[in-house]
Length: 222
Length: 259
Image 1 (cartoon, rainbow over the protein chains, first blue to last red):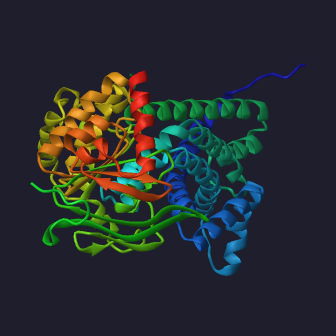
Image 2 (cartoon, rainbow over the protein chains, first blue to last red; image 1 turned 180 degrees about the vertical axis):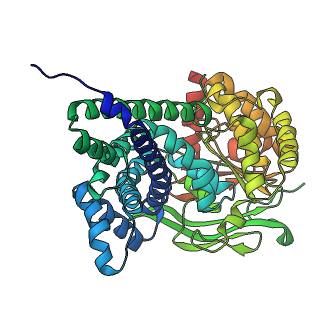
């Protein structure tokens, strides 16, 4: 072991690393937010939509959960342009992340919805509320409360998955690290720093999720 | 006041059930139900478990669909799949055995949700109404608590207040005291008696025969999905016509003595 650590070249590239970190943060947060909307809408469709819609949602979930994420990204970035749909690498990355997390999110939120007692819906109906009002005001929040830990774990996985988007040169942290590494040949140093940055991102998101739970999803206690 | 056992004065009919049948698969839960309820009338429905009494009142606001016959509320035939069933339901309050309060909302929010979202009331107005009804069920001080922080009796009174906040024309009670500890039954029944005295049209599924004696205009006895007997409480308790009614009364009165 005669390797000499030298972080100087890597530290010199800190503006790039910081930019990569911010891009990953932004990409993850945007995909989580849009993914949440997709998950809620999809879960609503799957639990109370018409039969044809349930079928479509089921097929979508099966397709996404049984194929590699990398292939999904390639499909969107390289495959769709031949059908005339062309995206920048960052947009393609965002779409792929949303499409991917949506499939898992729908199943998680559906489980939450199904955990709600039938009596809650009946109470809403008996008060003259319409199905969407019942979903929005009575079911949604307790359903999310019930599955919040699974949902946030899935979102952390999403954040870690952004790393795969480097394969289409989206300008996120892993892609930036690759650039610096090939320029400086300081592989260990670069990836050590990047590992720490991903860890930091995870801690950031866990903290944010806990804050959201405290502020909006806290369950009353006796 | 004379109490007719079957038909109230024509112009004041709130509810009409004509030859209503309901099935769960092949199993018939309601058979040929005929019932007319006048405005302001208080009806107690009793019968052994599985007799179809809960199903009967759940058909009135179409939480359960009927398969044959007609259910007419204030002159309008109703069906679960009809457009505007929510417009019918908002006029019919319902109190459930298991309370079904919304756990993520405070007592006050439980009471204001539907008035705001369904009736379009402003927040201030909805809250004023809610506080008025919470006062009426004797728990104004619990307004900012969550359901889980209340006793069963208190929760059921909130559920009654929540229904009343919609200003319904009919109130349905589906075994409202069956899930309560014995010492809490009275506080809920008291509220229901007060409501009955205010002139509300009420259908109450219960085994509380004291309540039936006190407030019912008519008592309905059901067995095996049929209405077996309908009578004013005096007649019903002292001189039941049907053997099945006599047997049932014997059983529940005997059970009461054992408590």
